[in-house]
Image 1 (cartoon, rainbow, N blue to C red):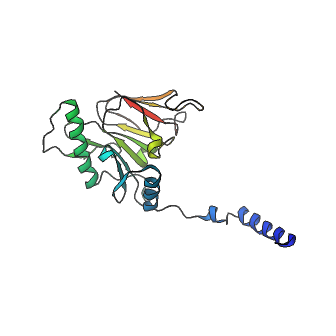
Image 2 (spheres, rainbow, N blue to C red):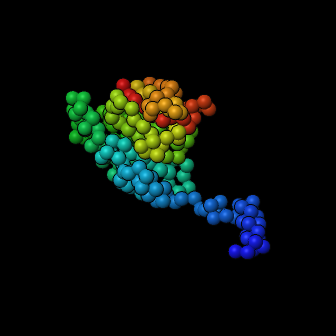
Image 3 (cartoon, rainbow, N blue to C red):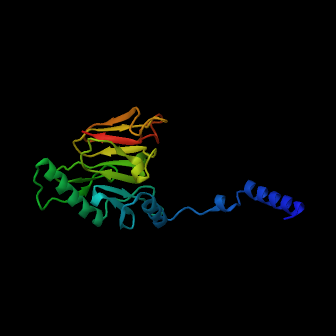
Amino acid sequence: MSRPLRNLAILVFSSAAALGLTNTASAAPESLQQQIDSTIAQYGGTQISAYEISWHDGDVIMAFPLPGDDKAPPSSAAAQELQRTAAKKEAARQGITISPAAQPTAATVGGCPTETLGNDWYCFYQDDNYGNRRLQWNAEHLSNVYFSDYGFEDETSSWVNGGGKTIWVYDQTAGKPQGTGPRLWTENDHSHSTYVGDTNNDRANWFRTS
């Protein structure tokens, strides 16, 4: 390309960038399905409904808001079936018998699921007031669980602990081995928070439970 044409191209590109007209700046937001596909491509998992991904046979479930909504819906029928299986597995580990009639229900707080016999689900939310994506577990985790395994590192703004476990949530110290960092907050049994606070917002990297 000649120098005059090259200079013209640079001028046109610079003007377009200043006006926000480049392809990157004008790209449309990802659709719900695109978000799900992108998450699975990067972090694995299985799509179980129009708005949910499951890992480890339902031990971990991520729910996305439907188009036009700012909060993820309660668990789908597919997720509830996986929750029943996860509840039975966790109960068997603890030596507890769950009635065949027991059904998972949506908690009144943040749509975080629970079981009628008190199986312990706990949820983390991308935005305050239980908004945007919901990432949920129910099992005991005495070793570290890393949010980066699910595309949720430095994302948590609110949470619900629907059961009897205590949950400790940590930051990651830069330049240190994974799993090294200060505790951000403690989630006592049957508690919840609509906002983790400015100091702790979007800093959660990993957690452990009692």
